[in-house]
Image 1: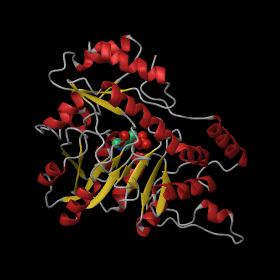
Image 2 (image 1 turned 180 degrees about the vertical axis):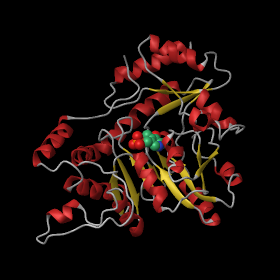
Image 3 (image 1 turned 90 degrees about the vertical axis):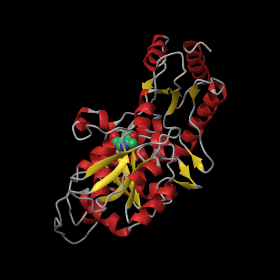
Image 4 (image 1 turned 180 degrees about the horizontal axis):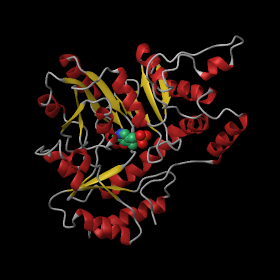
Length: 376
Ligand SMILES: *Cc1c(COP(=O)(O)O)cnc(C)c1O
């Protein structure tokens, strides 16, 4: 059986967790601080704040951006549902916009149509690792005085116009769920160049507490904390951070391996006229968190039949990225909302296996399997 994905975890990662447990410091402490420093350096952002997962990171981003009840935030429906949910957490309304037909990233023209006097921010998703056109959205946000927030859950190691994702905006949220390119079990990070955002996110992730454990622990004077606002427990543990430090050190190599596999898919499936493969435009470098193929209307095999046929020969696949507006939780408020490009992209695409290490033979098996199921 060839799986759709698997995390790349090694003995060093396990050893780092083991060593950290034996230090006796297992929740947010020195390893978290080190991971944050390394992460900021890697992405080129000034600051990084580790959190329990990307969803809690997005929630903090919404709070520090000042998004509140009655506000609207434009985002794609075609994304993991946590994107839209994070807007709901602060009482605001997700306004779903269409995606581009090839990249599946937000369509800037469509977003423009949906700006109202209530719009406060745009939540830009880098779809399955492919960078969105940050400059275009930055210009749109500047023109309309909106805040730009990036959901970069899948995009660690991707870059846009020569700079790593994480360095372009003031609120960029990453995930270390095992389905992403590097993992800490669960985990997340928010990067920012804004010192006020940075300080407030550090407070909010730890119950609004004015003194962190590391500072108190190393102080020679007794210290008493204050809780300066209502916060949350969104901490990452030192055990996770120790794994994250190891994973981050391997990230560029992992991305390089993923790119080789994607190159083979492009070279060896590119001649099939009735499927469309993803395309990396000039200035956009993806980490290929997922590899999605689109079945054009003239494709002789229906999407679900292709997925079943692949499964029958031992190859896992997944439907294309979900749409939030058709999920039960959003159906009522989205009644009557029509997003044809989004629905078409979701309903007619599949994600095929891509992970590290994936052997040449496994890549060949997937390519041959797809070709035989499509009879080409
Ligand atoms: C995975 C994912 C999330 C959620 O990440 P968690 O770390 O699991 O909370 C949010 N947005 C997108 C686009 C994702 O792919």
